[in-house]
Structure formats: C-alpha cells, structure tokens
Length: 294
Image (cartoon, rainbow, N blue to C red; front, side, top):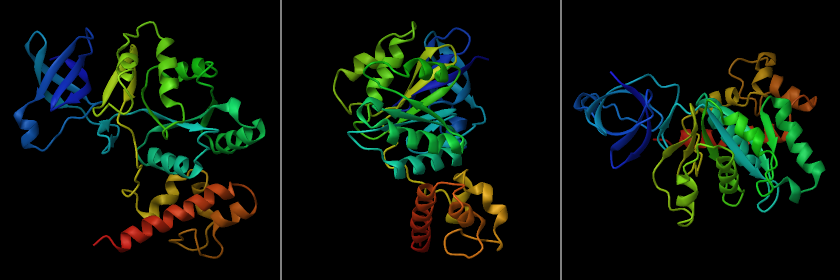
C-alpha cells in the first residue's frame, strides 16, 4: 500500500505527497481514524489508498516523533529561530522561551542572528558566543545580501524545518533567499507572498529537494509553554540542568533555595546570568498559572 507525507490540510482535505513518485494526492481520513479520535496533521507519515488518479483515503498514521498543537504539526525535525540584531532589537526572553519549547517537543534548535550589518559586532558576538557555549548552532545572516544563506541551505537538507521570529526580523526575506538557492523551486511560496502580508492561514510543507521541506505556517505567535510543569522547566534549559546534581535538596526549584547547584554555577560564571533570570521569570509564570488552574 502506498506511503506518503501530509504536506497540507485545507478544510480537512489532506494533500499527500506519494513517497514513490512524488505525486500529490488529495485524501480524506478513513472513518476508523475519526472513530478512534486520531486526527491527521501536516508532517504525518501515513499509509493511504488510491481511489482515483489524484484522490485517496488515509488508512494509517505512523507514530510521530513530536506533535505541536498550535499550529498543528507533526514530525518537525528542527526549528530556526530568527532574531533581528536591530529594528526590532533582539528579544532574548522570547528566544529562551522558544528554545525551551523546542527542547520539550524534541525538536532541534538553530539560532539565526539576522541583520548583523546593522548592529555593533561586539554585541552580536556576545549573543553568538552565549548560545554557542550552551551547545546551540548559531548562524549570522544578512538576508538582503545573502550572507549566511548557503549555510542555512545546507542545514535544511534532509529535514522538515519551521522558521519562527517576530514581525520585522527578516524571516520572509531569508526564506525567499533560501528558495532561490534550490533549483527545484516551483515559485509557489514567492508568488503567494506577493499577495500581501499575513494572508496565510493554513500550514503547508514546501519541498525544496528530496527529503527537505520548509514549513510555511501562520506562525508560532504566543509560544505558550503551559504544557511544561514548573518543576520540570529546568530540564529544558539545557545549560542550567547540567548542575542539578549539585543541589543539596531533593525537589530544589533553583529559585529561592540555599545550596543550589544551579545558583552556584551562575555565581561562578559557569552559565549565563541572563539565562538564569529568564528561567526564574518563566518558572514563576508557570507556577502562578498552576495555582489558578482550577
């Protein structure tokens, strides 16, 4: 039975790319999936059955590596977080929240520092080195002149990638520059963008070459991390979590306790004080929401 990848969903009609011949087939879920409350999502690997030349029925959804509720997507392998060095200025609080979100969902994170030509190189290097030290891959780009685009193109290969960034960071310019670097571009994304900003309400995967896709989405606007329990938040700050074993007390929240391994690491300069401040802020926000949940 044919196997494929769901690349879009419009009004519960799923476009499926047949793995064997790359043909696009419009499918609906079989009734048993609805009965079992299994809802397909863009990014799902599925087994389907042809009912006509270009239509079919989804019979089975294979196990997912991850699933994001908003926007609904499955099996993202990586996210590229685009940060503008100027106009707008870097929002590191949002970035840290995004990184925790990706860690929680088992998605690889890549940080893209865009508009590097507009900001003092010392400040750019400070941010670059802070996140590189943690272990994240950080790329410097200038979407307008193509700086860093070749490196991004290499990172995209054999991945399903979503871009995220605040309005004005240059995300769309970057994506369009990337598409120009691939010979298989059919122009769909560029043409659609010409119709005006913020017109996209559906999620779609665009193939840039075999096994490489960019997710065009309405955006990860709020990046709520409410699914993470406050007591587990530290696990998704990978630089801070390395020092949990040095905490004296079991159940340490790493906020107010004495003899906390994480706080000691901050005091010794082993981890970024800015990252720790973000952790404390997000911990308190999650704790507050948990207290008023019911």
